[in-house]
Image (cartoon, rainbow, N blue to C red; front, side, top):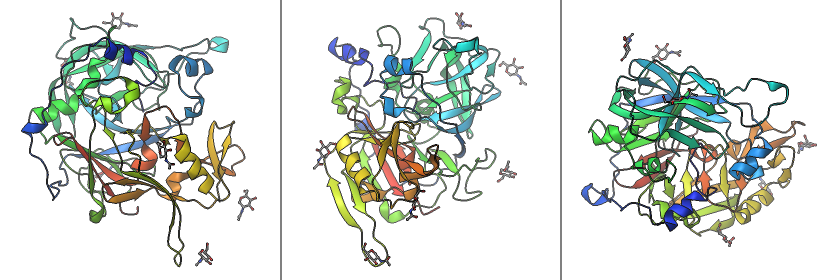
Length: 447
Ligand SMILES: *[C@@H]1O[C@H](CO)[C@@H](O)[C@H](O)[C@H]1NC(C)=O
Ligand SMILES: *[C@@H]1O[C@H](CO)[C@@H](O)[C@H](O)[C@H]1NC(C)=O
Ligand SMILES: *[C@@H]1O[C@H](CO)[C@@H](O)[C@H](O)[C@H]1NC(C)=O
Ligand SMILES: *[C@@H]1O[C@H](CO)[C@@H](O)[C@H](O)[C@H]1NC(C)=O
Ligand SMILES: *[C@@H]1O[C@H](CO)[C@@H](O)[C@H](O)[C@H]1NC(C)=O
Ligand SMILES: *[C@@H]1O[C@H](CO)[C@@H](O)[C@H](O)[C@H]1NC(C)=O
């Protein structure tokens, strides 16, 4: 996740305290409400996403202090799902991020800086692909403050705003406000050059010295407000490293691909019986953030329960060990690889591995023997419980140096927000229905 965060940054509560939050605007009443049947159809604008894996990096200790990143949360930003944006007449690869709202890319030439003293004076490497070249046809937006964002993993970008047509999968956001970055500390995958932020306009207002700029419409908002698509998008994230294919749209090389679908569903098979819906909550749903606004900013839902079970085996059914029905707010965020939850629940899960999982200081996260018996972990939404596949719960590809211990796909943190990241999202199709202020999920068929 590159979410511009929040829980860790005291300025947010100071905004709320100063009463600087804007009036709530509720559009919900004007929009048709779904009752009963789901009207989702497969989108003709389903864009395959490429999945890139990054060698896990270590965040410098200084950054842990600076950004208040819990030490255990290092090494989590190791998966990127990317698409091509057409910006004016240039194609720029960016990472898709449901946890932030700005769309930005580097402009060539840009300056990559290191955040701390590099022994030996090595040249910093931001891991960015080739950026936008030349000028935006809509020019720069001169009366705005500079574009500056800091992300929870200690990275930052800075640059300026401009306007240009932005096209994704045949849908164009005309005269879209976006940011070009010319000064950054970044930890990228070497292929993408920026981010496509898919969250709400509200987050764009948390900018400038008082973090209270007028919000603007992000790319997805511009697209649906112009009537080009319905106000909904959905994602299917592949577990495999299939590279995706930008040229095809619609069902192509099968179930392994990842998709961003604008205006409808991605072309992947789901278990239709499992469709479930739940409201998207406003920023004040996370009390620790100190917001008093009813505005929605990120995709925050409150699952009905979290379940830990001992897996059955053909003759014996599953044995439910825990069903915690406390409704806590969680973010749906595709740039977190793992899922985070409260220590109590996660310890119950770790104990249910056989042999039990343990904390390994070398990896900074919990690991279990790669051949351990894996329990089941499920998230209940409505009447459906979505279980994570064993390979997402115990990640066979993320091993400690002995190669005998595998990383667990869920980690604990008692400081919100809790997150449903890639290790959960690979198991479902997620529909972000902004028009109806709800999310829908269905279990993906085994792939
Ligand atoms: C791309 O757009 C820029 C500015 O809008 C223009 O100057 C340039 O000629 C265009 N290039 C091509 C290959 O169309
Ligand atoms: C980045 O762009 C802004 C706006 O054009 C400019 O003021 C600034 O000097 C540039 N910074 C770098 C490092 O090029
Ligand atoms: C992408 O898909 C299209 C049509 O489905 C196909 O013609 C093309 O060869 C594929 N490209 C790659 C790189 O797989
Ligand atoms: C299933 O598990 C039970 C108890 O854990 C065990 O007694 C039984 O033999 C197992 N059955 C199979 C088919 O593995
Ligand atoms: C359920 O989860 C909540 C929040 O994570 C926690 O405070 C509570 O203690 C848990 N309840 C049980 C019975 O474990
Ligand atoms: C599981 O793996 C560990 C370490 O690699 C090994 O010592 C143990 O014998 C294995 N257990 C089983 C049941 O295969």
